[in-house]
Image (cartoon, rainbow, N blue to C red; front, top):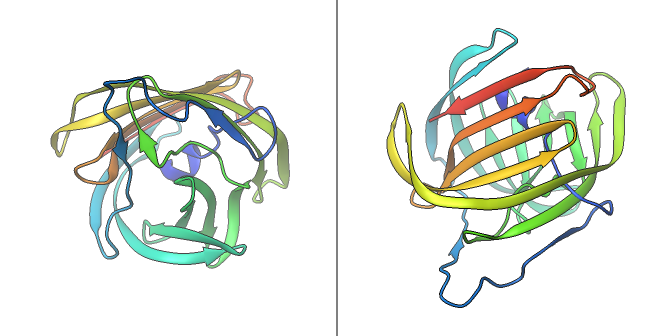
Amino acid sequence: MRAWSCVVIAAVLLVAGCATGAVEPPAGTSKVATKFPAQGTKWRTHAAGTDGLDTTYTLTALGDDTYEGKPVFRVSDGVDVFVFDKASHSWMATLRNGQERFSASPHDGSGSTELWVGKSWMASYTYYDRERGRSFSNVTYWWKVAAYADVTVPAGTYKAFKIEGSNPFSEVVYWYAPDLWVTVRRVYERNAGHYLGYGKFTTEL
């Protein structure tokens, strides 16, 4: 399972299909609108994990499309296509050869169209593991923007928002660099109580 596919299990909310959180930042707090990279943009990512995963691959922004009647943005690693809801900037599905491998309904709630330090929200969805014939309703995740600071990865040092998410079975931390419009680092860890068992996966630009 590729690292992006592993990460999407970590997701969101209290009532299926909704997200709640602060609408506006406190006075004096800067907020930044998130964007998807331009169609055709390519970036290399290294992924490593406790299951022996150790690979480098190129991600390509495929651009806008529709999926299940919703506007989406698509990214490919050359094997899988990752589908993101444009309205929430959150992951919806991982496809291979046009078929779902994993999906979240309506989406996993991990993204946000605007970020500021201190922002927090909850999200909930139904998660589908099509490969194993499993599904989980009301998956609940708590998210917060913990910091805006330098993060160093193999490709360099970037200013990025550090976004943390957790639920009783897994945790995810990712760093979104607004100057690049991509996530430059992501760490996903699931505990032994997760249906797939313990695992830790890191992806870096």
